[in-house]
Amino acid sequence: MRHAYPIMLDLSERTIVIVGGGQVAARKARGVIDGGATDVRCVAPTFCDQMPSGVRRLSEPFAPHHLDGAHLVFAATDSPRVNEEVVAEARRRGILACRADADNDGEAGDFATPAVFRAGSVTVAVSAGGSPALAAAIRDDLAGKLRGDHARMGLAMQSLRPVIRRHVADIALRRTIFRDLTGPDAMAILLRGGEESLRAWLIGRYPQLAGAKADKP
Image (cartoon, rainbow, N blue to C red; front, top):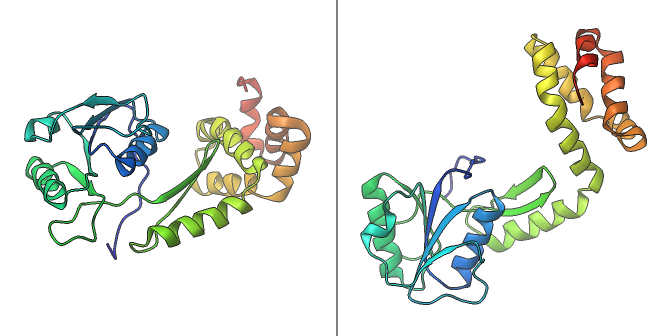
């Protein structure tokens, strides 16, 4: 998959179907659950001990009807034939599918899952042109550079973003404010005085935000 478009998906109201019950399938299940999925179905004759408890297990061989209502599909069995069948059926239904054994001959999937690291509201996702080992190494290197205060700023910006959008109509000025929030001064104020101090500092710098004083933090 040389050319791919990275995207962050909201899985909270989507049905995810994973075909396979081994460790690879368990990792896919854990990944989508960590990403917010609440309706995860897993189809396989047997399941490994690592399969997350939040998964709805269907202990049977794959059949096309298992994809009924699915929004996203993972083919993660140890059988290339079954994986190809799953991807083909998903394609027939217009459902995006990921094939875990994408290096095998046959029909490839529509997307690949990156190596992911999460810290609060901050998510780092890395793809390395079909090399999971390299992607994981880069992810781990980046994770080592992230600090807890980055996650704290991420949460603060989640709270401040709607306030800024509500009180600042100028798009260019919004961008300037958001860039300001990523600077060392903003970080120091957040760590020293918390989100209320950061909000007060921001209002002092940008008169357009004066109306935000009445907003609840």
